[in-house]
Amino acid sequence: VSGVGAMLRPAARGAWNLNQRRDISSWLARWFPKTPAKSVVALKTPIKVELVAGKTYRWCVCGHSKKQPFCDGSHFFQRTGLSPLKFKAQETRTVALCTCKATQKPPYCDGTHRSERVQKAEVGSPL
Image 1 (cartoon, rainbow, N blue to C red):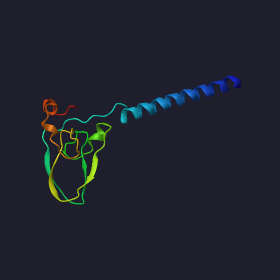
Image 2: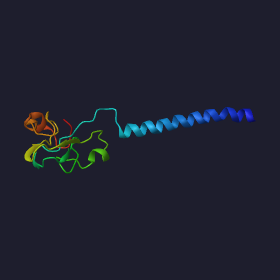
Image 3: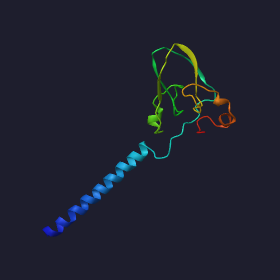
Image 4: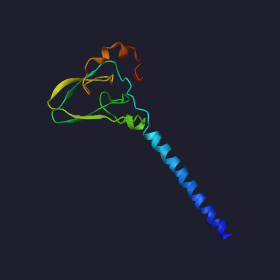
């Protein structure tokens, strides 16, 4: 009897480890998807804001924030796989920050929102 019990233990332990690995990998896949994350169009026009010299800001990259153009943490709760862009204002001035999320000069608007691609896209959808 002791021989049979000894033989079952390693198999049971191996099955538990396999299940544990599956649980961990499915958890990782939910929080860290393998497919590249895409931003969604938050708005089709930039937002003008006054930046204060020396202050650090977090610009929304995912497009889900309700506090556009700044991050409110939505990227985390919606598991977008994206993180905000932290930047420090060099001087106090009014700037246009991008909300279409397609700018080539993040976080600043470069006029990309005027393109046909952005204007035809639905707010809340990826480009």
